[in-house]
Picture 1 (cartoon, rainbow, N blue to C red):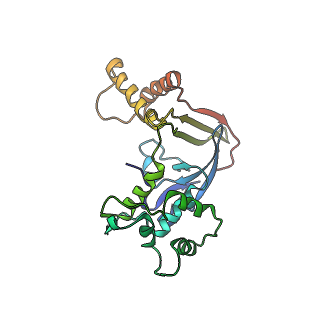
Picture 2: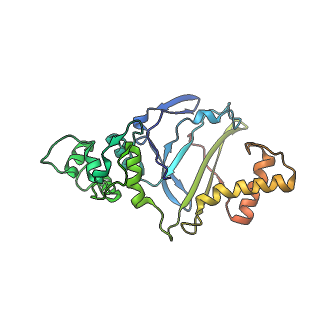
Picture 3: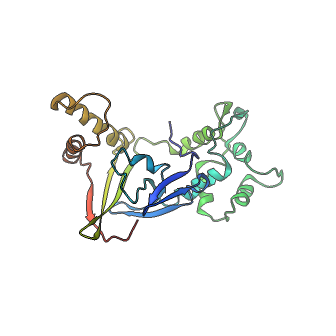
Length: 269
């Protein structure tokens, strides 16, 4: 199943001791540019409710807690177009899809005008110019294609997923990239200190992906710790050092999955 960041609830986080909220319709417009050393620039999008991680990670006293998702620049503006069109809605069904093309589906969300093309109407509705990179992205993903659906009924989000799968499905030689970035600040001897910690893992091909490795390897190492090291059994969160210490060490030593840290000047969050 292709993961789609469909429109959900408001974003919640805390910044410099102040609670902050981003309404659902603005999630893909409020981004932050982040440079990850060795991997280039990304845009960070707030990832729903950051506050629910405070207790689990023992961060109830943290003045700033913000969790986000990294995407290449331009992703958020293009995805915001889907949100504005209503294509990410998963709350109702559209019928008669087996007789529709992707172009017909797109036209469902635009004003009726038998004389204007779907392309012209979408440019007017989204207020994007002819040479806009956003329009090029919408064209590339297939919104104006004459390809058809293989089913008759689905939600708008399910239809969008089907369209995107035609171009977003990995080909055999494609490589995925996993990037993580942390910014951690604390007070020491009356001064604010800060480090940046980053990690990047690139897959080999569509069968041996970075996503599969970074998800599966920690679980496999944890299982080995239970079998060989006498660690407690059951459903546990690996939030204590006796768990994450050996897991991170083996990931770095045997699989080259490791974080790189550097001290940086504190400039706030």
